[in-house]
Amino acid sequence: MSKHETDPAKLPALGRMFLWTGNKSSVDRLVYGIYGVCALLFLADFFYEKHVYLAIEEVPGFYALYGFFMCAALVVCARFMRIFLKRDEDYYAPYDVESEDYPEDQLDKATHDG
Image (tube, one colour):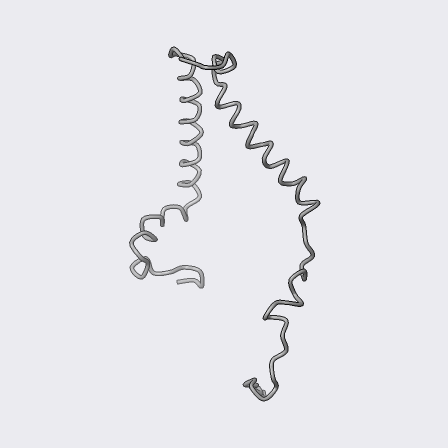
């Protein structure tokens, strides 16, 4: 067994249920299945009568297109906001516990003579 492989028997039940996601072809089939379901739902929007409140809702596929464009807009806005909200890597360092010096007498230093 390699370093990154684990014995499935040692995993919890939920972990064993998702072992199939380690295979790339299985994940690809899942993604293509989701694409197919989305396409079928988009096409189904053309074949039923809608009871709408706004005229724009009558456009076939309106909610699918609206959801896609709003998701894309969120990504673009997040990238734009990153310019203003980004902090340096050591922004919290002066107040971080990791930045404190340890007392020399409490460190267990090991010497490795080779």
